[in-house]
Length: 274
Ligand SMILES: CC(C)(COP(=O)(O)OP(=O)(O)OC[C@H]1O[C@@H](n2cnc3c(N)ncnc32)[C@H](O)[C@@H]1OP(=O)(O)O)[C@@H](O)C(=O)NCCC(=O)NCCS
Image: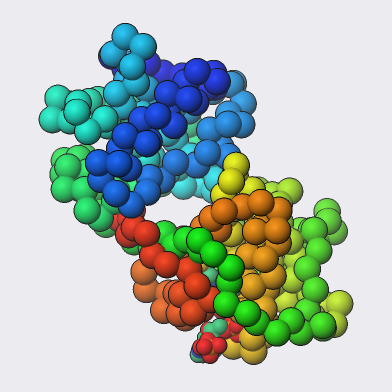
């Protein structure tokens, strides 16, 4: 039955990891599970929906905010328990949670190969908003000569306006209020002047790269390639076996950069606006 959860116990996290393992073994690819968010749930609000059968977890749906006005929903159902309405029940409960929270829009993340997921989204009146490729780097990145004028440092409080401006210019949308507050933000500088920003997060034996942006006036000059190479080297030196990132399917330039440095696509995910 559906259980709403404010915070996740170590046993619940383990059950989610076991369910993820069973689902990936059956379906391949990977699942949109934000482990960093799941491990650090505040416990103050209900953010996860679980379906338990006794002590066996058969379904899970997480609500992720990323500090943005958009809420993302992503879930999974045990391969042996599909076709019993568990997915629909999880989604209905997740949508109810979203109604109780302040938000701009709601996106349901569906692996492109999941016909059942697409059907669920469409039954809720979902409309395809955009699609993203998830990519992974499993070995060392292709070598890139480092430009000594380009440096990386942790963002400080005083960098927040510059980081916001870089995101606004680079991504073409107004970043949400909290977007410049992420403690993992790095400022990319050239000759001591900020020219870009990026976030590097360690998630167990994986590392994730997010919010990668170079000022439009400085793009196409090799800064992105140089920085990406350094981030991948750093992540691997710190013990990450896999470096992952996501890129919109129509961002040809970034996709070309990532694959040319050694990243490989693992799955394509469709984001349905509900
Ligand atoms: C993606 C991004 C971070 C890459 O940084 P960058 O400094 O432009 O990257 P580089 O100069 O190292 O270029 C990398 C590749 O992109 C291509 N490219 C970059 N700018 C280009 C331009 N203006 N015109 C054509 N191709 C361009 C180049 O072909 C280059 O490949 P090559 O080395 O084989 O020629 C940057 O372009 C950017 O901020 N884009 C907008 C935000 C974004 O899309 N972020 C990624 C989200 S996943």
